[in-house]
Structures are given as C-alpha cells and as structure tokens.
Length: 335
Image (tube, rainbow, N blue to C red; front, side):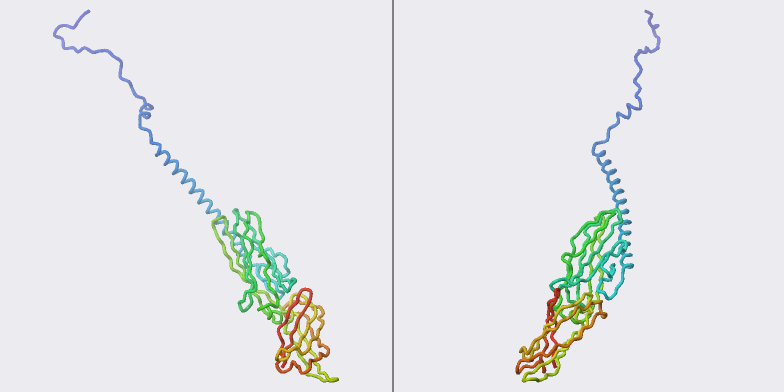
C-alpha cells in the first residue's frame, strides 16, 4: 500500500454515508398537535353560530307571521261592526245568530229567552290561524253589564290551541245570561235600555308573542212589559159591596213573544189585601226595541174587602205566569 509522501500536508478524508434529508411532511408531523380543549372550543363556537343563525331565522319568520295574524284580526274588527235594535251583538257578528266570516276573526251572537226566567246570550268567537306557527292559550272572557255598571253575568271559555292552517271556536261555559225580574234586573221588565257586553280575548302565538284584545258591544234591550201601567178605577157601590176595575197597558218591546196571565192583587196603604183578580194575556210577538205589540185591557169588577181600599197610597201587585216566565212586576202605586 502506498502511503503519503513524508512531509506532505494533505488531509485524509474519511468516507461515509451522507446526512439524512427531512421531507416537508416529516417536518409538519414533528410540530406539536393542538390540545383537545382547543378543538372542543372550536366545535362549540361553530355550533353556537349555527344555533344563533337558526334562532334569528325563526324569530324573523315568526315575527312576519305574527304581524300577518294580528293584521287579519285588526281587519276583522274594522269590517265586521254593525248594530241594530234586535238585541244582537255589534262586534264581528251578524244579527241573526249565524256566523259572520271576517277573515282572521268571526263569530255569532243572539239573545234568547230560556226556561226559569233566564235570558241567555249564546256567543262565540272563532279565530283562523293562517300562519306557520301554533296559536296557544286562545281564550274568551265576557262581562255583561247594565248602563249603571251593575254586572249581570260573566264567564270564560276554556283555553285552547289552534294549529297552523286551522281555526277554532270558543264560547263561555256556562252560557252568559241572567235571571229576569230578580234584583236589579226587575227594571228590565218595564224599561227599555242598552246592555253592554265586554269581550276579553287572549292569545299566544308561536310560544313567543302574547296578544290581548279588549272589545265592547251594545245590546238594545227591549222590555217585555215596556211602560207597564195598572190603573185602578174609582170605587163603585152596588148591592152593599164596593168594587173597582183595573186597566192594564204595556207594549212588548222584547225580541221574544210574551203570552200568559196576570194575577192582580190590590193592597191598601197598610198592605192589607183588598181584592184579587186575573187577566189573560194573549201571546204578543216582540220585534225589538220600540216596535212590539201593544196590550190594553180592563178587568171585570173586583169586589173589595169591607173597609179596605187601594186608593190613597195603596198598590197593585202584579204577578205574571207563562211557560217560560213566572215573575213579579214592579208595584204600581194607586193615588
């Protein structure tokens, strides 16, 4: 083997493999991976953004649908008002008791004479849900009162839901009504007046919005014995006894017919019974306030109890009986 010449400065180079070259993929894999918490936070952030967008879209659609819903009801209020003297409600109702379609809200109303001196007002209100969401807690509350403010009757309907694309009708249970001739309603026997029905309507829409309406409607009440008078004639004497006659007049202004019989009792100023008689009342058909049939009849002689007279501060006590009415009219003074 030949060696280097003595005194030579040449370096000896050792042979060996070249250094390894790292690829880009190896460099990326060598980087530190993100912690799991970071990845969870990123997933939650994306989910929150998606949910927020969906909520905004839901609120926008629900708001537009709710505006359309209340617009339909507002148009119903404006286009369905009418009134007459037949005793029917004037808000969103017709006067014959049949349904009146008014778009978003409609209803029917009537006034009826029922047994046991009851006057009833079968009312109902219907709401159509043409939107995309459910109407919940649809409820009707009614209060019937006199002009003096005295409440005659009130009641509420059950709370119901109305799915999208459907309608629902509600009415108070039991039916709104009052007993005629009892307490404050005795004046309604002989005096025409107006009654007020206040409607409270509550609905919730899409589980987000609440709508409350307070509406009122007038009923023209025609008295069945309007301007009732019982006029006692002067006392006449014959065959040792005294007697009088009684002339009874009234007009049936009610929306229902009246027919039956009067029992007339004559009382002295000390409430002593001086005599009694009956008077038949043929059925007189009512046609509403101010347009009813008139009644004008005079009784036969009523023999008075000895020493008793209704004149000078006494009264005529009148009871009326029929299949539907059995009541006492207000006392009539005898001058």
